Image (cartoon, rainbow, N blue to C red; front, side, top):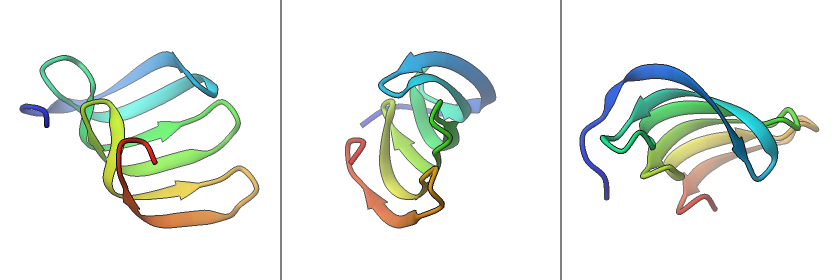
Length: 77
């Protein structure tokens, strides 16, 4: 997986839940890679590790209803 990480920056794009904001490290292709934070249109927030644009590694997902999952993620799951 992936290459080197660049410095943190904010990027707005369209994802499966609508417009999102991402702040964190990126690989050479500009994908989320390393540590980062993503805010989804529905109010959910993920903070943790990314690999090649996907939630991958240790992270915390805060759902809009206030429930939390904290643990391992693999390929966005």
